[in-house]
Image (tube, rainbow, N blue to C red):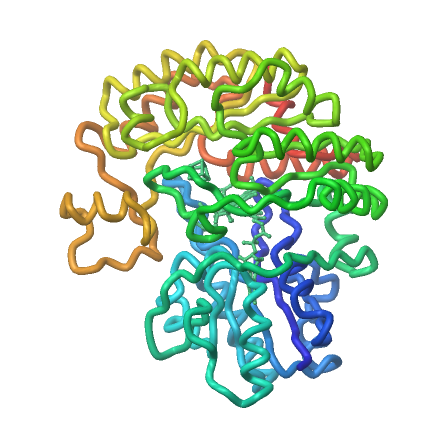
Length: 449
Ligand code: B12
Ligand code: SF4
């Protein structure tokens, strides 16, 4: 079957993100099904979608829905209207069945199926689209238990994809050039899953809970291919790169062995690390560490079920700085257990995190299938099965999102390295100028004075 894959994400903050998920979906199909890819970010003359549908004549259209909204309570812009328009544009040009997928879809499958009037949806890993295509070819029903949503009802999150995971990266695809021209950043995965249990987190339901480690050598080879294609920075998209320290070290060594010389970075949990851990990674090209710190109040970290405490954060911070890499911390204030004192405690302690950028998200978005959701239900915060597609933020007992925001802004006192949310239009405009001048990478280090 001829499959057109469409990346619907056109959000450009903090920067446009290469649609990595579709490389994997294409990797699972391309042996048996011709695949064509359209990236809505890359629309030089505004009609790439129409041209692709006309020229390729798809039997099935797969639409990737990555972001639902910014998750930033200061400007919770939603992208749903845009997806609705995109679906209408697809439907007006082809009768091919429409299959939804992607992290945004996986968080809200039933709602998305209904609101976007799709024929099918793939919850979680898109490699399962191959199972649906097999069934469609045989004119059989979609297999059950494989996370395939239909308009007729709810579907459970399927077990992790147990077959080979193959990325199809084709440097000659036009959208690759789009990202190379705008910042030169490409991305890669080194494993899937997160085995931690943070109460608010959607990642385990998107990627699975068990860690599935990719062969380090194959990851090194992929990094090398991205570099050869022109990438000037690589973002490792793993939920937490260091959740398997041994594997992350093996990947770093594989990068070196494969001759990867471009800088790279990713998300880390500020957990206890062996001495020399960050130095080994830095020696293999790591330049940016983004810590998912969330709070520096131990009582809050405990309620959030974070796998570390504030002392670990300071140690990890010091070790990363000592290794010579740029450091950022993400904070997620306003969840259960937060109050005036815990916010003050976190902000006081943040002052000790020298030479880093601090991103503050003030308000914890409630997602289905999380422990936070259960807590919010028990606390009567979600009456009548409230629709969560329009962001709903947890109400902590002692303080509300607006008050937290005021405290953060007051404490920041205009310091450029204290960023509320993703920094919004201002930060995106600065980044875009730096990219235009030839810089690459996340570039938040320019905010550290
Ligand atoms: C890495 C990451 C980032 C990095 C990306 C860096 C880079 N250069 O790649 C950075 C920090 C920049 C970032 C920014 C943002 N992110 Co982010 N990010 C992630 C993360 C951790 C991984 C994404 C990823 O690449 N995964 C690896 C690929 C292979 O997986 P995938 O894309 O999901 O694809 C698989 C499936 O979804 C599926 N699939 C995908 N498409 C399709 C299509 C079809 C047809 C099918 C069948 C299947 C399918 O198959 C794929 C293979 O199995 C996810 C969380 C997560 N664990 O998924 C959040 C996540 C995607 N981000 C999210 C958000 C909100 C954002 C921001 C808006 C936050 C902000 N305000 O700044 C921005 C938006 C950036 C942009 N321009 O789009 C949300 C999106 C959902 C939501 N709530 O809206 C997520 C899910 C986290 C969350 N809060 O739950 N992000
Ligand atoms: S460590 Fe990060 S990815 Fe894993 S459950 Fe916690 S917040 Fe989610």
